[in-house]
Length: 252
Image (cartoon, rainbow, N blue to C red; front, side):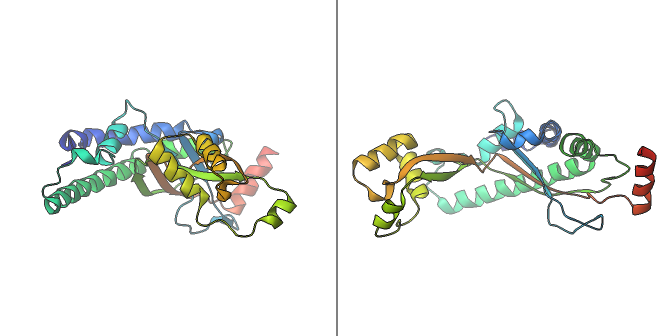
């Protein structure tokens, strides 16, 4: 059912996609947090120098570039072009789609395995150099890495909306009732339905006297969804205290 599935889900493309993700991660820096197409974050907690047991502590999200195999796969499986799918036999359609997505899951597991094994050292060194200010490997060995999850998606609207409001104390006291439902969701629905900008919609609603938009003066888009979501667990434990003390004394 998925077009070109046999050409997309190959062992060669397991290598291509794994390398693509690894290369993107190895180029990531703290500034990537503010990037439109990438996000990287590490969040770990140490107890007396030992890594606490957390489900994941390292996240990397990235959008696929149009000339990449990852882009082709994401758009083949998560297309919005539902009109192109046959509708004469829904049961058979769902069965075929289910089989295709089962194959995708196997493909993703192979990518995870390749990242965890063949790209382990490259990922760890990238974390050390780019995200942890080149911390000494003798202080933080980072011997263990696990690829916990890898999700692919192609969201219709990959943002969370933050509604910007402003009103004086008098205006707040004058407002008799709270908002009914989410303004953000209403704004998003209107945007997707009409293709108008958020600014146009807000202006129109104000002109129509919609009280819900009375104090709204703008909207902020916060990127929250990407084509690829990679979740990892890396051992950020410090070396044994005696070793740390020795290294510090030598450095001093």
